[in-house]
Image 1 (tube, rainbow, N blue to C red):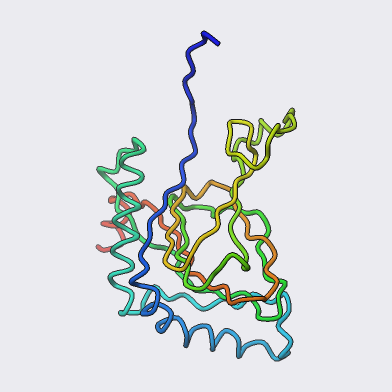
Image 2 (image 1 turned 30 degrees about the vertical axis):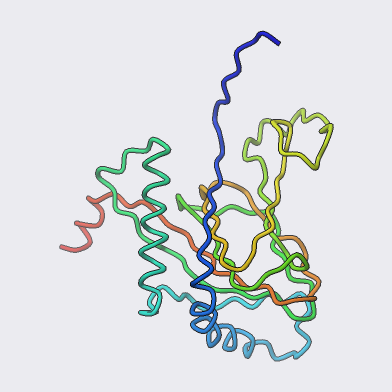
Length: 209
């Protein structure tokens, strides 16, 4: 083929590993998960995902928050966005654990009014749930053809999954639709989820007056 190819409107996903944080962040997360589990009166927790309250204010997470905000800024900046008059802030931060009896999952969704979202995996294995990302181009779904090989990532792929290990970070633009497949409760599955938004400086300064 002699045609010159340019890949337009690319949808990136970013990865990092901080295995050295797993033990510490699991200990910080434990009380939040215990409290979330105590809200369920039925001891049979099949299908009931345990969501914590917001953990943004936890002083033990300062390093974590600095890290995700710094990376969010670099991602948006390197993507070509002008952040000169914007301030990035974590708007949502919580830890969740899928039920021990199985059935935990998240249906496909996006995070509204945000710019960067992500996960940090605390407990997972090749026997647990994992995230799937879907092609965000709605118009493409109107006449989608069958893929030749669904096991390969190609320009024909309509969804892509990733198998994390404890310590894996995943960052992505908040418009990217994602889900978590059904977990069978064979081994623990826990992760921290975060959403980051870019606020106009004018708005921040106005609120601080």
